[in-house]
Image 1 (cartoon, one colour):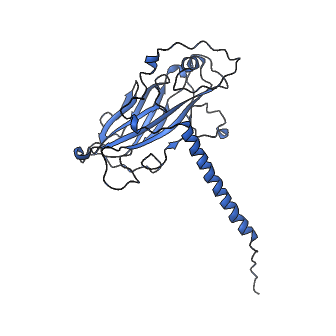
Image 2: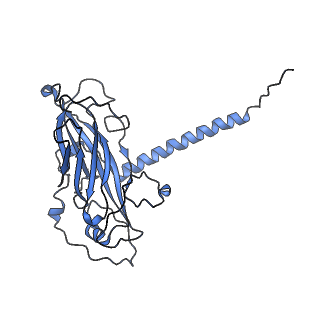
Image 3: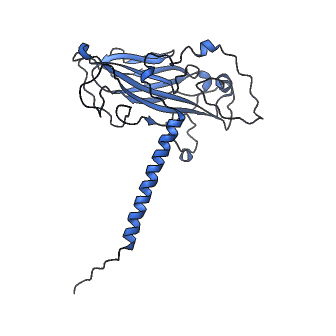
Length: 284
């Protein structure tokens, strides 16, 4: 944060490899009339659909795994009172695919003490870098291509400069990394949008019935489709690996902890049931 800006406290709910396990959630772009109570994942609602240029494909869902987060480096001997860290905030594909086939632009809302606090990035990689000294919440707005027929999706991320569970001096070589994994789900996507991105490496498409008739997908330049990926990004050595296997292991471990807690509670209830009831006699 620049000079003369207020200090901002840390958000204990943000997790990263230097603090604890990274958070994972599912983001669903959906029709507000849908019954969300039946969904088994976290949903971030947007105001609703925009006017699509083609008819929507009913009972079809596609999703795009994304990661958004920050990486902060301490400047060491170059650090000053107002410039102690250099950090980057970004939105990337979960396995570093180019997201520009789905995302048209990303708007980052920084602390108002920065010059030009609203930054618009209209081409990949969707990121920006700054120097400062304070932590604050960054608003991130994803704007999708017009043929997606969806309004923008707002996300929020807390910039962290200091690791919470480490002791000793800071290191200029080991950054503080905080990332969040999300899956942006498009229910009933417009036909033109689906046809255009169905073979895109960043998009997960379900197996469709053989009776589904779609126009042929456009032939894309493979070099052009990889132009915005982050596989060779300078920060990629510090990116968190959000593989499906890792996520399944975390879900399994969490389920086992819940089951163990349920067993413990049942034992406690059983012991309480076996204890003889005590009666208090009223004295006349």
